[in-house]
Length: 391
Image 1 (cartoon, rainbow, N blue to C red):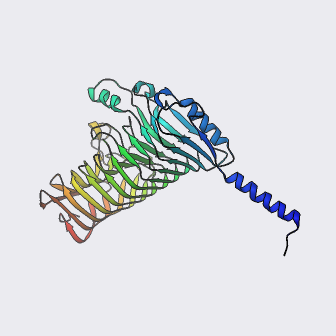
Image 2: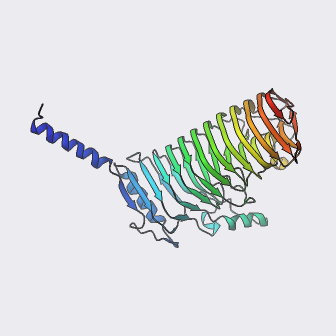
Image 3: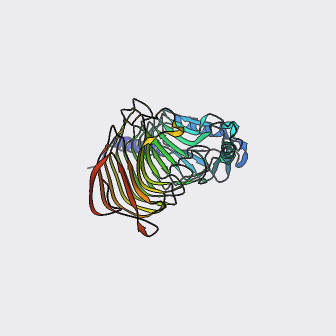
């Protein structure tokens, strides 16, 4: 049946409008005044690109070409008129080498109240070595800034991004829902202080895949209020391992639940799979945790639950942790421990760990059978378990 002419024109017009609306607007930071010399302050150009992309009703691309772009603190704020902004980075974003510039701001690059933002490619150079040296010297230093933070945002993708030498944490996910990170690379010295690779807190449905993290603190740290977290195919080292916690710092605290960590390797790390809580009252919890398919290579504490965390012995001596740890499964964990005690469950005397499961665990120390240590922990072991379970 032939269409009337007017209907055909309307159909074509509608198709043209939908194609136009779907075609992303592209904003090149260089066209907006950024200089790729690593010295000229390009902050204003990046803010301008974001303002235009955020105001666009069409999907938008912020394009960062090759070169080094010096940026002071940048806050990319929403909500935006569209929920499909891609920041495509070919070059490197460079933080101020003088750590006093970011000082105590706490954050360098911040995305807040955004929906549907993707960061693709590129390098973030936090230039944190000066601040690390200041802290190591014992002088009075600012706390510094985490390189990249997402706050109160949804539907975030970070792929093929490299973070170098952050002053503090490399990447922080705070108060977010539906975040996917894939192919992330994190690099900082093994003795760099408080440089967690990826920190997640108060967030749900976060996925971290196919990433390589070497840093001076936890490769991945999982804070209070984290639910439905999936970590897979991650290599960690140097660093302090993958840690749930520290939990229970506050009396009233959101719990951690439904965490899967699978197909991970730890090389020369301080810890492997760790859960830690402050030794003081709290209503926090950690439950429904699965650690599966992990390889340990010369790891000081391959499997550890520490519920007596009390830095500098302040605010907790003589108390016990209120955090309830339950339903934690360790499945197919093998490799070598750098210390004699490869499995350590040091749980709360007031809230013993419950339903801890060991399945097919083989950890050795200097080619000998390693040891296990349990305190206030209840659970089961199945299959081959070495060191012999103390549960």
